Amino acid sequence: MKCPACWAEKAYVRKVKGYKGTLLKCLFIVPLRCHHCYHEFSVPWLMTIGKRTDPPTLRVASTPAPRATVPHARRSQPVRVDARSQRDDRAEAA
Image 1 (cartoon, rainbow, N blue to C red):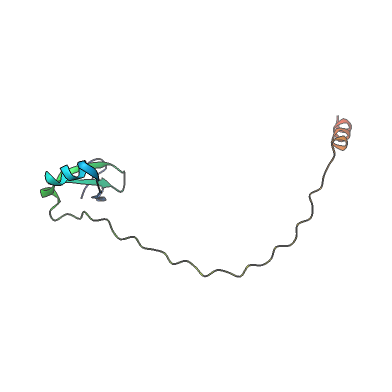
Image 2 (cartoon, rainbow, N blue to C red):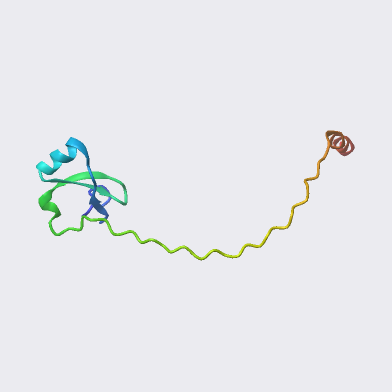
């Protein structure tokens, strides 16, 4: 089904719950949503005859096999610099 907003062929039936969904079913109106621009709209049931209104099945990608991990080398402790040496360095640079 074509979306009236973006004209993409990606509009599929959306589920409407509650009294709104019941009312739409009684009036033979089909609620649709575009998977391209997320526009929601409704059309009469007769306009959906012969059109694709079911979303395509999702393909699940297989996960790759886990690789063997190499243990990381132990990192050395960070070097601490005290405030006095920083002040002395700045004074010498100035």
